Image (cartoon, rainbow, N blue to C red):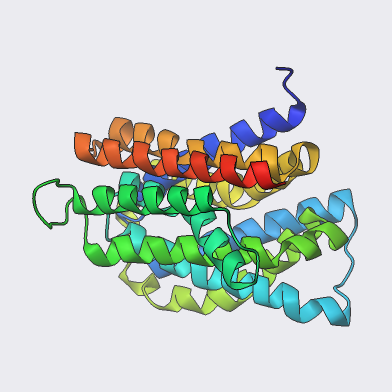
Length: 295
């Protein structure tokens, strides 16, 4: 199989996004969630707008595109990142990455409500995926329990996956017409502006003496590389390979997140949770195969 430059873009992106979970978890040890989310995406939005100005020039959104771009920003940045950051402060980074990986399943359920009926094999994949999610959250085969973080944090991560799925279902027509970089930059800017007041809730609680150079490095990594360039590389890869070939790479995000969380944060991942992660990925792959056959 010949590899395209798009493969390199996507592989680089999933490595970045996988390592974002433990890196952000580390930064959240000294910076409150709301402050971290708002400042991180304000810097990310400014970076992406600078890339847009350099590559395409700055064009103000047309009136008919303004509300959709604001809506995408409120959904994909303001709401999703507030929930994501608070969820990460409540549960394990490794578990969060696995739970967010079910976003394609939410997308298919949303599409089915919009009249796009999944194939029977797709429903089998969905059920398998949610069985894996249950194993990850429950962390036991013999009892109903919760391990590796709070149940609230787990449910918040599933909500994040749902928000990303809504964005994935609603955004493609605008991405195709306006361009991925244009949509991403403007929606991120609108979302970051709406998110910025959140920094008032917690900024006075920061003990700046505890914020080290390593914390700042982690913040810049998650803002510039994961928040801005990650989106750019992801959509560059999709533009080259198409959605069908690109979506497979998203299955690698929890793999890199698990490896990174165990290596750098010392998180413990049980065999049951590893089994659940494998079940989730298996369900996603089965769902992708079944949808591919219908195309």
